[in-house]
Amino acid sequence: MDFKNKVVWITGASSGIGKALAITLSNCNARLILSARNGSALEAVKQACNNSDAVKILPLDLEAYASLHDTVIEAISLFGVVDILVNNGGISQRSFTKDTHIAVDKRIMDINYLGTVALTKGLLPHFIKNKSGQFVATSSIVGKIGTPLRSSYAASKHALHGFYDSLRAEVHADNITVTLICPGFVNTNVSINALTGDGSPQQKMDTATANGIEPERFVLIMAKAIYRKKEEVYIAGAKEKLAVYTKRFFPKLLSIMIRKLSVT
Image 1: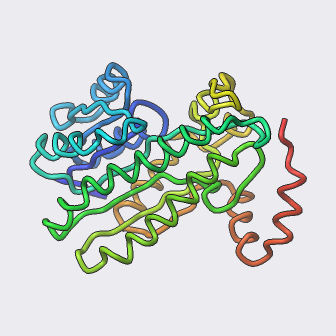
Image 2: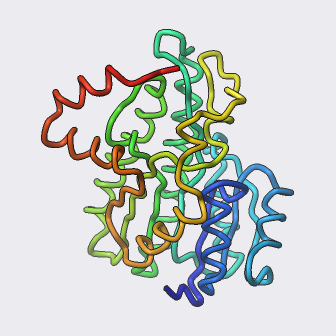
């Protein structure tokens, strides 16, 4: 893989998948724009990259999506162009539907869906003008199948699939591509930061997440999918991948399997 001279803008770049992807792409000669809320954490990621001179930091808050149009203009000005937008920022959930305040549903949708859509729509005219560009979105296996304790999170990821599948068809003639990345369990802080029913963070690591794919291994597969302009990729364990195909061909069987999942 060689991303030489490609400008890649990564959200959620301060930790986890975003951080690992930034370091990997810097080793592939990409020029990077790193975004998240935590500016000091972004600076640490920049220093860990292969060529920090080719890395720019642009803090943003996806929840404040009404102001992201100006952020897009600033992002383009950093290198004069953006070639690839990796919409990786987001937040997860760990709570039963009956216990989840509607404000939590709204916050998850604001961050995971509307923030991502706002950035995409803001950058779209730039891609159309250049007749080139790639949107990448970190979805989830839960963007294909819903599981207990993740109703709002699953809804936000399902929404991304609907949006990007429609967009992909609309912009094909403009040489713009869309890649949806669907992780299974990845060993990041996603479960620690996940929102509970009252909106507070869970503040503990799930066992399945702790035993998940290491981010460094995950992003090697992710980077190859971006490079090859794949439409949709599942990067997960065998059971998680099997669930996707069971949903497609044997949906009632998957419903039975999902009901038997441990939720503790």
